[in-house]
Image 1 (cartoon, rainbow, N blue to C red):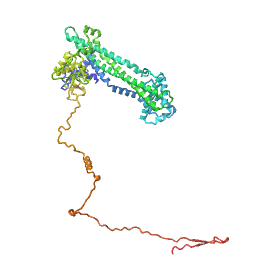
Image 2 (image 1 turned 180 degrees about the vertical axis):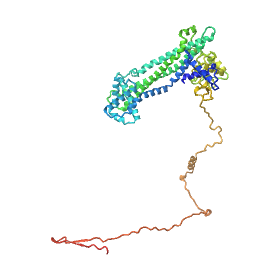
Image 3 (image 1 turned 120 degrees about the horizontal axis):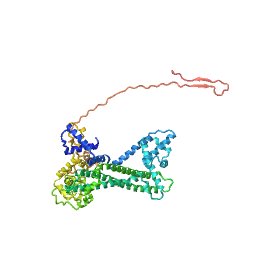
Image 4 (image 1 turned 90 degrees about the vertical axis):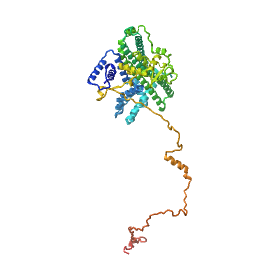
Length: 593
């Protein structure tokens, strides 16, 4: 179910004029009636109330915090670059042509990620190629290919930062002189969005505020002179709620746009400072250590990326502002400028600032109320930051003025009731509300049931039950389900309410007690001695069992040896005879001897 359809169901069910009993299970007739009423409400033409609900749904679905906006910008960038990055990290090149193609893909990736120029710009591609070759020549692709995928992705990001920083420095150096025109270094999208977004939001806000002041003047005049003229009050209230809701959203967008402008100014100052430091580091040197200049180039790239993020965020805010405009078309069609001026008939149109100034002199005197608590600016810290109920709208005027929305003036005094804070448009309205706050709070809830757009406009979500879609209901459940409320609570008690019977030297840790005992005994300087006396002799019988020694023998192998005769041979006739014969005589003894 779309969100505005669900809110329409909630509006129909809560409206007491439709006679829905939310405490019982819906019958088939109830479901058919609910479908018909919702269809009729959704098919209404030129309905400011329905447009306000649609506006609230659109804003809730498209607006978020600054941090989440930036995270989404980065996520979209990574998603857009994922295919190019995957082609680079997963490639397996072998030939010279494949290496050249891979190097060109890396240059394309750097151009897409930096966002300085289009990848189809020939001049920009030449500049990026020259910058990349100075820090990452094509000969290093072999080392790049053997890295892990995560390391490749990290190196691609680092190369992008370095190339972006080098190109920014070269662009600034071409201008000559020390002073650099930062306007020419800014992202082109930022130069377009920065002056336009804030002005467009302020223009839209001015139109909505003027309409709100005119509607308020007409309603005040019709309430003071109800019989004097024919004023369509039933249409004026929804129209007023429509422009007031538009005003609230535009103020939120304008605050974000102003914050972007402040961040841009800070980034520009930091970029100018980094550029000056880099010029002083490089000067006219032909060679500079990379450890000195690479961090500077990366800082330039980070600052430039931050400026790009601010430009993207300004574009998002501008788109939301533009898309909110159609939701105010119904009230503009019903109450044209000429028709609205005729209803005014010379009535004084007061701005919110004028009303604040007129009521600032009316102050609540602390002695006037008897039991209720009032917060005054002189006695309350962080007075302007207090969370006010009904989004700062005067609840008393909303009831007594038949649905008229007037901003409350906290300077009159803030009324504190059951932990909630309320501001009022006048002292009289404040005292009326303080006299019976419960009745006023209940009456405001009833008005929100008749006009469902007030639930979000006045921040009344907690006062109403949650409406569940019929398709999600379990058998036996009612249409309204009480919301699950949670809160953090804490209590504090005295550690020892009664200071008595407390041993200051108590120690629960046994090891600490052992350490203290050893320290007291000081065993290192002590000697244990024993002595026996006549009285202590033979006082105790001791028995010891022993085993007598046992003779044992072991038989092992017997060693033996043998001796053989030494062989001896005598040769006769070796010397002294020229023609003699050698006689060999064996003198070896017999083995048997």
